[in-house]
Image (cartoon, rainbow, N blue to C red; front, side, top):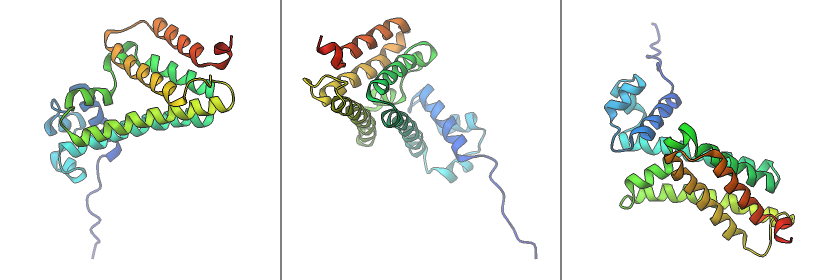
Length: 202
């Protein structure tokens, strides 16, 4: 008797999640439907529902992937680079994401917060998770830098981390109006001069 192996999947779940992320990023949560996800991915609704029970589940899976990818990138810099290089590269990357097409597109976390907050506790928890992760990684960079006498020690690491966090998130909003990259670079240079011990001591 021939064994029935079943029908193989004609798609990869990770590929669908990437497509879903693009849909939510471009159209927002309210502007994205299962029908639009079907059209963008080429999948039938039955295939989507095999992976996720509803649109909200798809959305949170895509949002979580976006957040975890961003935090992993920051953690890698914090782990592999010296504190000054880690901070400088983080600021430079933030400036690049805040100009051109990437700047106009904006940040998915900020877009989600703007659209769905206040009023959605689960969304608030996800956004707080992302923002807290960014601040914690920045604080780690500053603490290491203070221990190595790279960053000024007269200001708590958490204060400097909060300041840079607000700058980075503000840049992502500013990116919507297409700022000049050179202007953002000058701002980043000012921040670096403000936190480096060798400039604070002079």
